[in-house]
Length: 136
Image 1 (cartoon, rainbow, N blue to C red):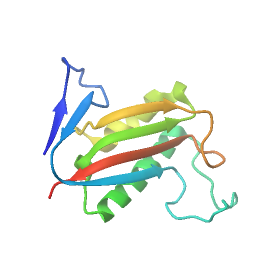
Image 2: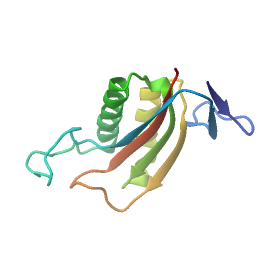
Image 3: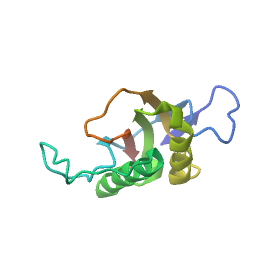
Image 4: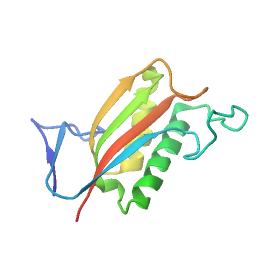
């Protein structure tokens, strides 16, 4: 069972909730997803890996990659209870939030949005990891 925790009233446009309580279920940890394909060569082949230029487009690809893994585990978006976003362009966090809110609809997991100086591959601007709890 999942329960949203508020410590007061929250504006509707807020893309996350302050807390989430979970009892029971199966916990699934989703590794950081980027705008690169889920499966790609290591070391990276820079000719093969060319992410979209805009942070909004990269956010959409990363979220879709998370969804693929979650669905493979038997879950759905509403099972996500915690999201961590790593962002190299914090000045564009509003664009990230627009894509994020459209993707999640009315579901608002707990979330951290962290500014970082660099991600694992050239051209990457966003990486998103999540924790989901799938009901038994």
